[in-house]
Length: 302
Image (cartoon, rainbow, N blue to C red; front, side, top):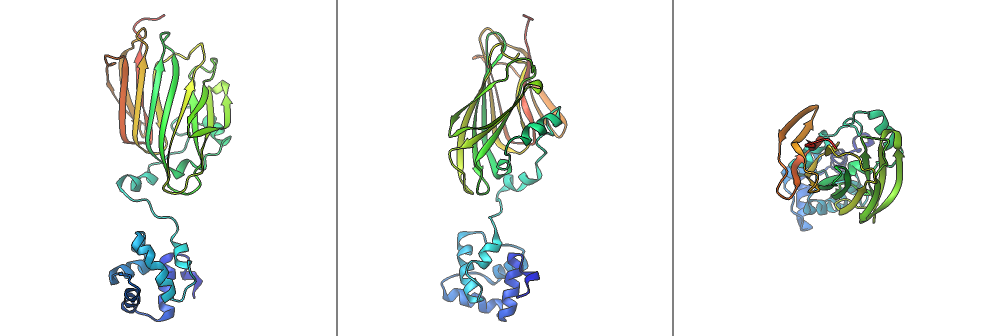
């Protein structure tokens, strides 16, 4: 067999058909005798590379094809590789990525921090849902951020989630990261001068392709608490659903609140009001890459 034509599934199938001297109609008949129904058009698309077998019924036919074409068991299957992402959102996701540091004002420091941890799982995970719940205390300081992530593995081996936290006033204490559900703390890197905390959250188990996981963690600030004037999240990869809740103490009710979203260097913002319970709520669907969050002012200086 001509190996120059067999580095892909379509090329290997074409080469095997030519070597055996079988027409597509004859192959279809052989498959039918095994109880496998595949149309002539489908066989033609497979050998031309216009489509590939991905459904369970189609994949079942590959083993019979290998037998009919006198190929080693698993040869064609091995050339298929992992299934391609399907669906409107997943098809556009690979083209909607930016470097990890691109959304930060000091990319060099962020890149340094991320080089200290293992980010190999990052692009293997689809962000199905992310939910941040932020608590602001009576002193107008950010007390905590509790985060919940629903993730799905797009390839085998994803085993961690990397968290980055930034404090605007580096002289203050950096927040403490606490794993809460289905994860444990891996490597932790701090850069006090830059106000950065980067940490690996190790999953309870390595995921296989198609597996999903829910993890939760909390960033807890220590007094003196960092002043809360804004809160949001940066996304280098798209998320299907992002929910941001900010709960203010009754003694710390902000004014001039604005919800913003920034995509590709362009920011769109509009005024919002704190609800009767003292909270801001934002929901973004199919968002990213970009930044999403709230900004506000305080009525009087303290």
